[in-house]
Structure formats: C-alpha cells, structure tokens
Length: 363
Ligand SMILES: [Zn+2]
Image (cartoon, rainbow, N blue to C red):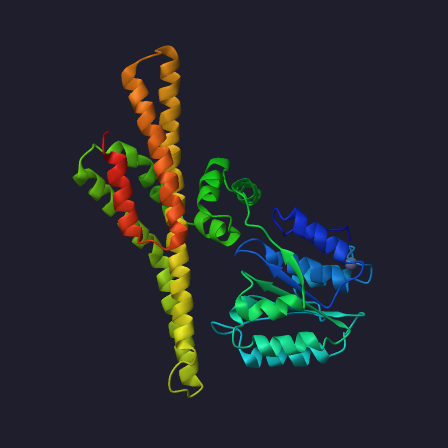
C-alpha cells in the first residue's frame, strides 16, 4: 500500500497541522480544535486520530491508517449528536466508551464534534476529562470557546483553525473539478467556509444572484425610486436563496417530531433549541449571502474605477472623468463601511436601501 497524507483532507491549515504532527511524539489526553464552521477541523480530527492509533505513529500506509480514515477503525469513535445540542445522555455514552480498553493498539481516540453545543452537558464532559482514562485521547471540536466550555478548554491542548482565505477555497473547488472562474466567484461568497462553498458550487442560482449585484451600478440613475427598486429586488432574491435551507430545516423538524411521536412523547423535547439553531443558521446564511453580494458590488465599482483611471491616462485633466473616478472611489469606500456593519446585526433591508440610495445619489 502506498502512503497517503493523513492530513490530505485538511485545507489551508499549515500551522494547525504542523502543531498536530509535532504533538504526535507525546500526545496529551485531550485536544480542543477551535475554528469557524467549514475550516476543516473535522478532517484534521480524523487524520490526527488515524495517526494516534497507527502502530507506526501515523505512517499513512498501513491497514490501521486506511481503516481510521474510512471511519471503520474500532479504536476511533466519533460521537454523533442527535438533537440540537449535546445531551447529558450522549456524554454518558462518551464516559463509558472512554473507560473501555483499546481493541487493537495502545490507545483509543474519541472524537466529539460541536462541543460548543454542550452547554448543559459541559459539566459531565469536564468530569470525564478530569479523570482521564490513560489509554484514551479525546479530540473535541468547537466553533468557539463558549463560557460553558472555558473549563473544558483549560483541560485540553488548544489547536486553532483560521478561517480559510479566498484563494484556499478557490483551489479546493478547482481540485474538485469546478471551473476556475466559477470557483473564484463561489470562493468570494463562501466566507472561508468549505461547507458553504460546496453548497454554493452546486447552486446554479448563485451565479445569477451574484450577477444581480454586479448589475446594480448600471441600474442606479440617481433617483430614489431606482435605488429602492434595486434594493427590493436584491432582498427578494436573498429571501428566495434562503428557501432551500428553510425547507431543509422544516423537513428536519418534521422528522424529529415524527420520531418523538413514535417514542410516545407528548411533544418534541428540545424543540425550542432546535428552532433556535435553525434561526441562527438562517441568519448566518443571510449575512454570508449579503457579504458575498456586497463583495461583488464592490468589485463592480472597482472595475469601473480602473476603467476610468485608464481613460484618464489618455485624457489627463478631463474633469468629467475625474468626477467619475471620485464617485467610484467613494462608492468602494461606502460599501466597505456597509459590509463592516454586518457583524453588528443591523437590519439588512435598512442597511441595503440606505447604501443604494447613497450610491445612486449624484454628488
Ligand atoms: Zn499507519
């Protein structure tokens, strides 16, 4: 068998992977991988687990490595979360798993994903981490270190995963057979999230939506009516873009409710947590989509500015061109300012209509 890179599924995280490779010489009992969604922490967890259970320290060539990467090694267990958060019952499963002896080698690895969703079960998890069975290594992954996780974090070695850059995401998409131009457009809208990039690259409407943003400068004729119409159109397409995710959430909720009914429960336990999680995901999707659109809009003004500057090279001192360049440069700056408010949870419709009104106003 030829050797494979155990961290081959990890995209653009040289620092984290370097840290993990050197940790292999003397592993501690718990690792906490922290980084935004889609930053390939899960792929890193599998690769690291494979290395930890390999009899040759992570050769990438043996049967143990191959089975660990395929997810069928008896000493590598990923704890799957069933509901919206990690329940105390699931943590009890972890505790009893942790006490077992490894089946094949000198240690076993337990991977627990999304531990930032372990608010209520964090104390139980902490207890397990505080009395570590000597042959068990924990790999926890989290989007953030939440207050409930602070003590868990203090008992673990922290490995930080950075949000991916556009170039990393574009390379990853091209390696999956996406056309370079399409890959770059998708990467611009993926906000460093590989899962979002994969979804967008399968979404034929994405390019249509981004083109709408690109056409905005041509639609603005200086009237408030044109600005308002353009804003309405963008917001409507944003809502339409959310539909598939909403349908997916509704189907998930219906399936969980049917399951609870089969078990004879009166309602769905944790229903509020589930709908809260859905709402968070929908808000995040909207913000990401808006940020992607603003980036495309900004690029449109940058391209215009570049064209005007080239013309100015030929006609230096042309006051009409100088005015145009000034306006385009101001537009680029205003879009940056609008994009920076996205983090502060502003009202998207309000932000967008006032931005377009500003961009359309001739000064
Ligand atoms: Zn191996």
